[in-house]
Image 1 (spheres, rainbow, N blue to C red):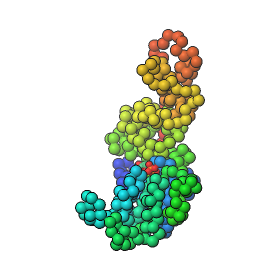
Image 2: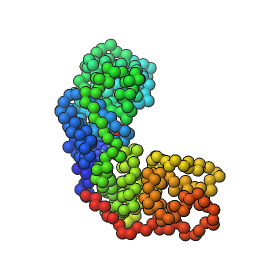
Image 3: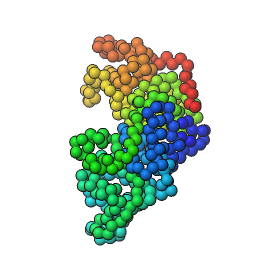
Length: 358
Ligand SMILES: Nc1ncnc2c1ncn2[C@@H]1O[C@H](COP(=O)(O)OP(=O)(O)OP(=O)(O)O)[C@@H](O)[C@H]1O
Ligand SMILES: [Mg+2]
């Protein structure tokens, strides 16, 4: 089973850390190039730097690359350096001896030691302080380090993998990140393209996630309505695969019937999801105690419209109103006349497009 193909009914997926590179497939040229480079790099001892927006799959790719490498049977030790003080970071990475500091009641091995013969994955590498960068450089350059509070040198045979969603090269240019460390960690750079640039992968990913969520939720969904497909295929997915998984899982959980309908997606979508697409140039009325029902309605309509890239036809369908009603509600003199009853017409959904989930 692959992270990006449709799962066989009833089959369970490997857990996050169990994938290998042969589990990954893509119909997108740049993602295929990234996976091909990962397969070649996995067989080497080169340090690997993984770049990509948040949620594109950097961590899962690091795991899979390790699992496809000669070190697969040795540990994969992951460390996220964001938001740690230098002392804590030292002790976590290099360990400490008993009595090294108040409260150090026993000797603790650090990540470098734990990853001996295996892979050390340093996540959020751009967030390292200057002091931490210097210590890590020394450890990877010479394969030696000391535990906190000790002068004994320990040897670490680790293969280094690192990742960041930040533009690391710009950090090097502005001297926020050491050039020598950058060269040391970027033996091979894998760049995962954002989901919005992989339209050819979207169909299989959506199908896989619907299948997986339906299994977990005990639903027997067989496909997407046309309206749902339009929402999911035109959205820009700023949170990438992580966001896709969450949106689809919630929509599947909230759906009734055997086809995923737009309401389930929109109910499941948080306001940040709706608001994350570029907004239309006209400012939305601010929420607050003075917000009238009509203003709140307009705000919601504009938010949905923005999330769908300004496509009025799709927005009308997603909102369950006709295109003419949507135009009327957004016209400058909307609200001038009396509120018509039953204005929220049902969307004219003529027949389901049971998007093939294979
Ligand atoms: N090819 C894929 N197919 C299916 N799911 C995937 C794929 N790649 C990543 N995912 C899923 O997307 C989610 C995010 O993946 P991951 O944590 O590896 O992203 P990340 O780039 O490391 O994110 P961050 O920048 O926040 O650390 C996970 O739930 C993961 O299982
Ligand atoms: Mg990650």
